[in-house]
Length: 132
Image (cartoon, rainbow, N blue to C red):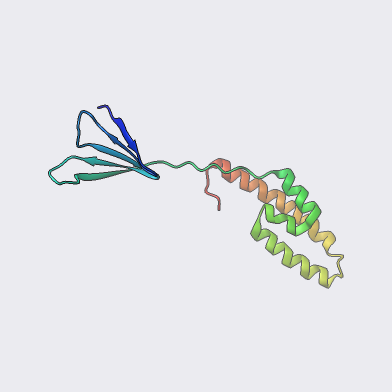
């Protein structure tokens, strides 16, 4: 069966078949609705779902490391928000208790954590797991 284009509508496109004049195919964002002729004026409606593809870029390991080396736990916000918040709180507490000397310990930990988080994010993304 051949389907000819009649006139586009925004956001839907409507098609009519010359072989079956009552058959209309309306493509809408997110799915297609096929109207099949019947005794009723509007006909029966069948809906077919379409597959959507979302392209998400991977995170750069170099940027993650650079931000974390320069900004410490604040730089972790690029690779992991929850990890960054945890390390910010820990770094503030350690810095107050040790008069700033504890940052010599928390800063490298933040850098390693950012590298692990970025690697895990990229691996899960490439395996097809959903990321939020």
